[in-house]
Length: 296
Image 1 (tube, one colour):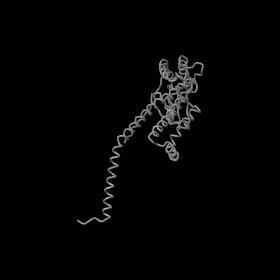
Image 2 (spheres, rainbow, N blue to C red; image 1 turned 180 degrees about the vertical axis):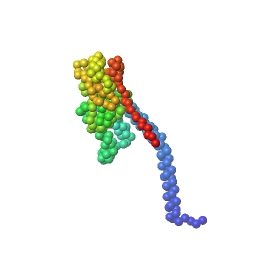
Image 3 (cartoon, one colour; image 1 turned 45 degrees about the horizontal axis):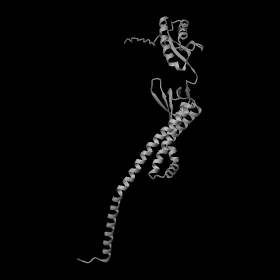
Image 4 (tube, rainbow, N blue to C red; image 1 turned 90 degrees about the vertical axis):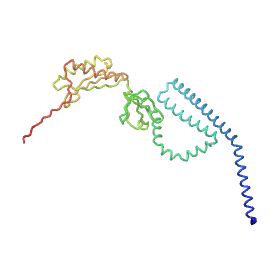
């Protein structure tokens, strides 16, 4: 066997040293692994403790804040909006605290978010618009929790809650409508609960052969006898339209907001009974079709 050259011997020595070094690093890593796992487990356990304690503190702060709002008679919409805002801010602070405990530099994260602010703003401009709309709603108070409103898009219902980005409406048929605050703040809103009373209109058609004066007397008597109608306000029955199949009469009166729907439903039923008892027919649409036979 030929003797190795000097360079080959040096390379062999280097490979042996490298293998010994790698084996030493692996052995050292395996020896330190249990300690690292224990330290990591302790950190995770402490992070969970911090998370639990932080959640309880957040709940306590929110509870104290809500009681303070109740004592000061703060508007329900304002209190719920501020509660959502404080809750979000405190949870973000808690997450940053836990992340910094694991070695994440909060200042670096803030700088990164700041540098990406333009892109984030473009991405969430709709949400920011809704947030600004919620602030405007709470400041200008076009409506409050409990009001019955209708927006420009035709959504209507009782305001259930004004949150950070959306307002929840409960419709009369018990459906929930979620409307972005930005749309509500930048559109026309019909608030039907601003005043204590509300105008009520019921339209009914009578036959062209019927006596309009007699029908008016019967319907005015219905309005006079109903307990839900505000008797001190104006009550009127007038011809609203000469339709194709009937003369349309409009019953106009006023009712308290809280009794509006019950009064409307009750009056609609009473109108039918009263006209039937007076012998005044309520016609339905009719169409006369004349067929002409063509002789071949």
